[in-house]
Image (tube, rainbow over the protein chains, first blue to last red):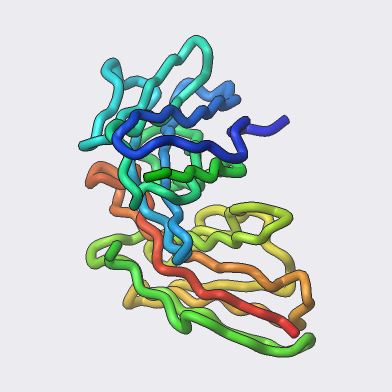
Length: 118
Length: 115
């Protein structure tokens, strides 16, 4: 079974509008972390936001917020006020295992290609 | 700029050859991770080193090996290259546990093309 599922291969949004990118995960580990990365066409992987499994509040970083619904095992990324520069591939990833350990390997989803239209 | 450096940026080689990819982690980071991104397999974890010691192994082929040196830079060696090894290879680093080590910061990647 896939550990990270991103069901939207591609999404379109108008500039200045908000968009939600879906991510569901599968783990039996009570301690885990969820991440979103952005990969523009140039290829680099840019860290956007992190949510720990024990965090009570949804994570926010500027225009990015993570809608964490633990019971549903979902960790959707919300981008507010989309900009043309947000056009990129977005990856959801998970780290399983206790926080504070030294093994943080990430398992990635297949990604969602976001296109922002002017 | 994440602070993680990788060289070379691009590499073109022939089947059967051997190449070495190099990574320097962010200052102060002890963990180095290697990932492979290909069209058919997506992003896959290969191997992790922590302060010079191998800590975790993923889907790394026996033809591939890695090491982390005392100055914490890491090298990924790929040998007997096949066409299917063509991919984007990322190095990532993270801080020690308890010092923000949750997040991995990725280098710009090395794009390998095997002809």
